[in-house]
Image (tube, one colour):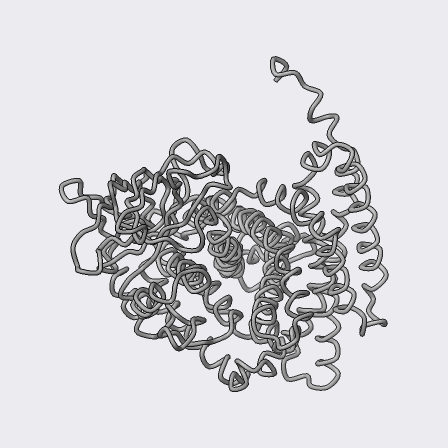
Length: 589
């Protein structure tokens, strides 16, 4: 595998496309200058390249080792050393308040580091990634006592975190959970009993203590999801004794072998309530939504590594001559990058990756605005945008991440199918991103069933406003007409969905997946239009980075000619409705 942090493109997205999201105009980030941010990201890139990347392949080969004698899990070689260097550098609490030991940096910086760490070692990144989500949830919903007790060691990296939702009989339908929480000690503490499965980082040897956030039901809880509460259940209790938490084994997976995916048994484990009784699902969504965005970045990160590896191979591998005649007559054959079909695969990866980076960072920037902008209306608009785009980022970036990794493997041909180049590992590892934290089908259902109707369609109106503001200054763009047509098609299709879905909800959910993809492509169109316009302006002012900016202009042309036209098919697919799906009787399958 080959990987180098794409710092130039990251800086372009942050400070040319997004204008730094005007972060240093927010009171919290007045000292967060572009130079500071890029210096931090550059150091983060070095850490990922030098510490995380070297142990990625071996982590896959060795995997996590479970010892049934003491129910412990040993992480792969190199992970402990990499973890110590990661937390020593302060990355565990990068966005957490300084009052709890964090760095108090923008969420956008955390987004960038998430991409870099996932690109270099997705299995490793799961450990601090889950801790970061737990930190966010505890920070948002726990009592001040729990915050003071648990956040500083988690931010320091001495303790880690998990989210414990799924049980053998339920995944998406969390209303079916059976884990129980019995109050004691004047209702200040609870005894948690039940089994959770597929728990990422449930047990490992990177930290002494693991803080589990567990969904469970109180004795008098209402049925369904309205009766779910959230509890903080540590592996080690405050007095240092072992809690009633144990690992029943690790899953043997298709990929991501360096990440410990555990069966966790809770037997009268002591826990503390986080948030209100029966309000646990709302609290857990703080962590779940964060995790969904992070999973989108996982898809992007692995796709970037796959692309860089495929590009390196395509420039070196000599096979046949170009159909128009030898391009490198001094060599026995031309490198395969001269062949149109190889370029088709490479450019698809390049253009999608750069567009998805722009989309993800756009949402990341809005998180900071939603939390720290002094104007309430601005905070609300940013929050509306994030709510709508979270399922889009999760699903689209992982769908495309998986597709791009497969394109990279295809670019290498037989070499890609071997372990020598590492892409087969990327293909296996990236596949889970379309499944966990809510399958991509569930993301699409969330978009059409919950987010679109919310507040009488206000979230969709915010999306259209932001798209139009993005492209408004560029009236001379050669892509403006096509992008405006795409926006109109999105409006038309959304109206069809609203009308027909209100009459028959099955109509909406039957076409949810193509609709989510339609939204994503229209957003990417707006971003690529602006990126090309900015590149053209930069070339007129300074030609010192000619190749970089010309590539942006040509990439936009590729997107608008080869990728965006897919929206016509998607709209037709959506407006054909549910009939061809739902007409089949069960015995006709």
